[in-house]
Each structure stands twice: as C-alpha cells, then as structure tokens.
Picture 1 (cartoon, one colour):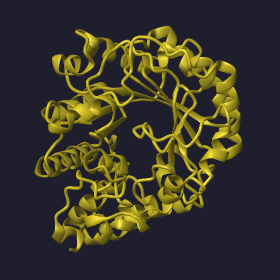
Picture 2 (cartoon, rainbow, N blue to C red; picture 1 turned 90 degrees about the vertical axis):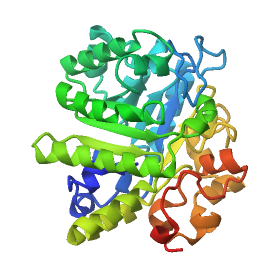
Picture 3 (cartoon, rainbow, N blue to C red; picture 1 turned 45 degrees about the horizontal axis):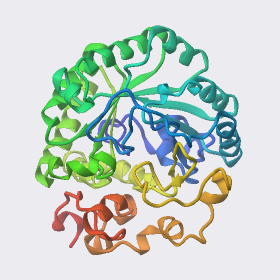
Picture 4 (cartoon, one colour; picture 1 turned 135 degrees about the vertical axis):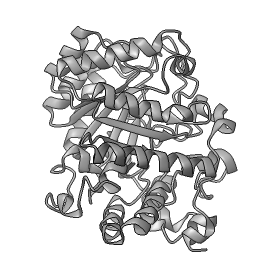
Length: 393
C-alpha cells in the first residue's frame, strides 16, 4: 500500500509517524502502514456468498454460503484472540460481507474488543437503515468497490444496474455520517475510467480512493492478459499522482493510495527526487518505515472456513485453521517453512528482486503473483515495471 497523497503531496511527514512511536496500537489508521511492530491487519472473509459475480474476484465468490463458514460463536472466539494479539484492524470482506446476517453483530463485537472494524463491500446492499446500523456500532470505514462508471462497472460486476445500486449505497453511507471510500482494480478493460473516478471523488466529496493493481488469484487469474503492460502501468501511476496533486493544490485533498504493487514506492520516490530533492529525503524515510509488501507479516487473512493465509490472495497454501489453533499461534509459528521465509523474505527472493537497490522498501513485491506466473514463490514479480537502470542493475 503506497500513500500517493501521503508521500507525493506531503499529507504525512516522518514526524507524524514518529510522534506515536510507530506502534500499531497507538497509530491512527492512516499511519498504520508505517508501524514498527507490524501487527497484522486481518482480512476476514466472513462468507463466500455474493449477490454479484465480479470477473476479477479473488475469492471466486458465488450465490450461496458454504456449509463450513465459521459460526457466530467461532467468529467471536477468533475476534477475542485477535484482540489479545494486538491486531489493530479487522477488514470484514467476502464474497459480500453484508450477505452474512450477523455481520453487524460481529463488527460490533470487534469494536467493543478494541479493534477498528472496516468492511470491503460492493455497496449494493447498503440501505439507509443498514448504513445507520453500521454507524451506530462505530464502524471505522466502508470501502466500496467501483471499477468504472455506468456500464463499465456493470460488466465487471456481472449485473446490469450495479453501478447505480453502488452509488446509492455510497450516498446512504454519507448521509449516515460513515466514512466511505472507493476501491478500483486497474486493468486494460477499465484503465480509461480512472480520470472519471477522480471526477466522481470530487463531485460526491468522497474522501478516499484505493487503486489496486491486478493480482492473479481466483477469477483474477483468468485476466492475466488484461493486466497493464509495464509502460501502461507507469503512465497510469503518473496519472494517479497528477490527479491527486491537482485536487491537493485546488484545496480539495483526498486520501489516495495504490495497492498491491510496491514498485510504486521507488517509482514515486524517483519522480519526487527529480521534482523536489528536499522532499524526496522525507519520502524515502517514510518508504523505509513502510517496508514494502508485508504478506505473512503485516497483513493476514482468515477465510470463511477458518483457514489462515498469508494474505487474501494466497488461497492455495493454508498455515492452519482457527478452529484447531488460535490465529495468534498460527501466525507466530515459524516451524512452517513458508511462514518463516515470508517473515524474512528479502533473503530468499531471486532474479531482479535479489539485486534491486530498492529491496528494503519493496520487500520483493507480490510473491503470489510471481508464483502464479513462474511457479516459483521466490521468483521476481512480473508486474515490477521499474527498469534495470532504475533498480541499479
């Protein structure tokens, strides 16, 4: 996760992070990526059921709930353990988390246990009443997936009218006073929509947007040929920086992030170095605190059936199941060779990654994407778009 507004526009300074001693339990949500202890943000896919059928769904969600979902009681035992372990945030996801009848109860329980609760949703099921319920339990944030405007979004979601249903959900969140933001997965089929997404941020006064690079997992693995080329990625990241700065300079700042490609960090730094060498020193300091990809360390996933994964995309390798062992025990058990290596990944990456001068601030990028293309977990990430010259080869 690379904070474009934080780094490029100067919305966060190194002193802002150091003021909190960089410990997860003390850091505000917008600074968590700079924590020193890397207590994991946990994505909990509470259900596989979804009312839509998105073409890039990493969970391959379907219409019905699987029989082996964690029960409400098991979910609360999980939350108790996450609270005791010091997890700062639970991201309730799916499928579509609002398909689960007890979602509000589970999220409320997490908040009462001192964990910030957020949801990742398609937005179509957020009625006015549901938005009020979510507000009343002190939900921290609602991330709404939007992959284009009008028919473009509908094609991604597999349902005509999904765009307008999603906008209605966003409006209901705003009327209820819930913080709401957008989640956009970039690929060739919708990259031309990015400027329109920025227009929508401004028009509807939406405070936050996350632009996700495509990860080859679930149904997303069928879209590899639709991923952006390296040159297209560079142009797209430049566009995101340009539009973010434009809003910032016009007094309409938004929190804008790119996600799932840590090459964005060095790329942003090199641009700032050309434009403002003094600011570049601060950007580099923040990137060093961020430490790059954190799958298996600063982010983890619990699936609907209780299996624990390194992140929400890595569903072919489970470290254990919370029905049998607490998440905290599974997460710290380095007797599993993959878990041990993920916690010290820089020693194991190969190819360009192993020789890259930015390894300390990228950490080898996305291992699951490298494995999807090459069959080798430790091969270089094929989505790294930095040139050999830029990485010091």
